[in-house]
Image 1 (cartoon, one colour):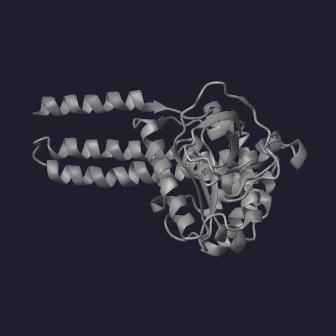
Image 2 (tube, helix red, strand yellow):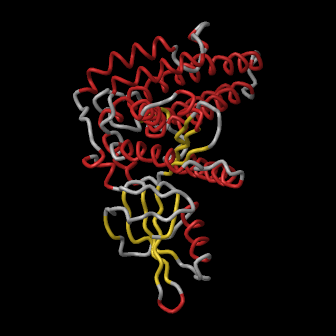
Length: 360
């Protein structure tokens, strides 16, 4: 029995070694901690995309999605400039199917789910009275979580913890029951919570560099966290048992890293920002006044999935095209252009910006 337990632990150690990697390049801030990434990225990203589609669809049905065109355009514009810089940390992330939606809610919250699915709650902007630099600090932080695959890492940690606890519980050892309970508690306080705090610190640093590279002033990031601190109160209690760093620690770290990212900070006007190559933000249900710039043509037919496909097909049917067959013909950061062939040889084109599609 003990030999079997030993073999099981050896297998766990082998999986640990195989699963250790770092998901991003270090950038100017130097984030490069080895991560446990044993769960397939496709699994985590697929579940996140499905959940994001469900959330967005439910918000749309309730009339709580992208109701303020000016605010939506502002959020998507800031996100666009940040997304244009993600290649510094992850070249593959440039090609993610990024989506950005604004949810009507009094909550002070925002998120970026795995694979680039961003959600911003109106309460965050309105209640904190955020300027664009402060908004960029929030979005940069959330995008950093996705780039670092922190959700995938946490799922991998939880899976490993369960495996170890199960191995001890079913080992047949004399004190297997109490030992497995101790291992379970230990995995929370020794592995999961400290890593969560470290993940938040990494997101602060990467987000700070992203906003600087996108032309937003990193010196204003600390004002965001001070506003949050005023809302949440002081971070009292033992920091070790909290999943986030204390506000004081967070501010100290951000202010210490600011001189490093100031070296890559270049203030940008709308006209000269790489992220602003796409000049039009499409709000669901409206047509853009002009077509956005597209990075290139895609000659081959590309199968479509998810929210874009659904919106394009639905919109085409509403415009006297009963059997639409969308083809992807162009792609830019956060933007896709589709051609739909209709009866009689007529063609319709649709532009999707961060998951919001409208006729061209």
